[in-house]
Structure formats: C-alpha cells, structure tokens
Amino acid sequence: WRMITYALVNEPDLWFVIDMYLLYSFGREVERFIGRSAFAMLYVMLVILGPCLLTAAGPWYGSVLRGSWTADFAVFIAFATIYPEAEIFFTFKAKWIAAVLLGINTLAYLKYQMVTELLLLWATSLSAFLFIKYLRGHIRFSVRNYFRLRRSRHVLRPMPDARPLPPRKKSLPAQSEDVIESIDPLLDKIARHGIASLTQREREQLEHAREALLKKPSSH
Image 1 (cartoon, rainbow, N blue to C red):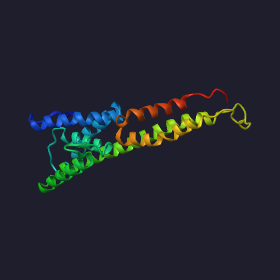
Image 2: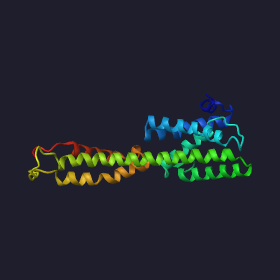
Image 3: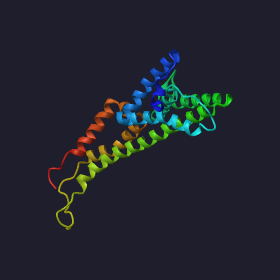
Image 4: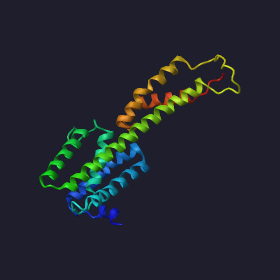
C-alpha cells in the first residue's frame, strides 16, 4: 500500500504549498486537453513508476521515497509538451522553463550522487513527455479523420448493387469546399495550443465547417 500512499507524505512547508498550486494550475490545463480519464491514468502511472524503479534499484542504491514532487513536476513537463509556446513566469516560454528546471535538478542530483532520484526524475519526465506525445497525435488524428470521414459520406455512398455510382445532380457548393479545406490550420492550432486558444471567429469557422459536413444533400 505504501507504493501509492507515499505521495501523501509531504513536508508541511512553503514548497509544498507552491507544489500544490502548480499542480492545480498546470494539471488543470493538461486535464482539459487530454480528458479526465487520461489525466487520472497519467498521474497514477507517474505515482506508481517511482516505487517500481526504486524497488528494482534497491539492491544497488538504497533510497527513501516520499512526497509527490517528481509526479507533480512530470505534470508540468506534460503541460510544456502540450503548450511549449505558452508564456508563463514573466513571459518565459514553458518549454524553456521545463528545460532549465530539468537541467538544474539533474546537476544537483549529480553533484550529490543521488542516482535513484536522478533516475526517477528522468523516468517520470520522459514518461509524461511520451504519454502526451502519443495522446496528442491520437487526438489530432481522430479529429482530422472525423471531419474527413464525415465529408466522405457525402462523396461516396454504398449502393445496393455493384453498378457504378451515377453522377450526382447536386454537390456541395464551392464555398463549403473552401470551408472544409480551411479547417486544417485550425486543427493544427488545436493540437498545439488546445481548443481554448481558438478565437471567436475561428470557433465560428469550425462550427460552420461542421454544419457543412453534417448537412445532407437534398438529392443524390
């Protein structure tokens, strides 16, 4: 049971308060992007990863693990992976802050020869990075294919026999085609910065494209 409850053992100091605030601020944004279930899966994985690594390294390096600092820092790495260009902490970009913090902690652990802590830091950070990279590509693929598959339903419809599909009497207007082709930049922006980054005009454009795709032609 201590493989999970160790994360609840934190020193009651100012750094713990800051840690909880950062977890709330950045964890909320990560949860908005990947969803509640995926975020819960990510955090549980980060919490369990530490005891598993230290158990494997126990015969060579003894260490005591308590507190959720490494898991919370990995959540910040996940945030920086999703929003690398986000400006935080006096307009510094998230990707540079994550790199600097990771480098400082790495040098500190090397100086004091804290091998297990260094291993845990990089393992949790890399796991969060790869987890978000996988989900980000999956979300982008799913959203893009949703629009393309919805569009294909109006282009190719199954026929009851093998005869060629007769010419359509009426197709989508050129304006609708232009709207459909213009959603690719919006999908890229959602994948990089989240749907909250869309302006009101871009949201209307995306909604207009969705309605154009969902609208059935009057004759076929």
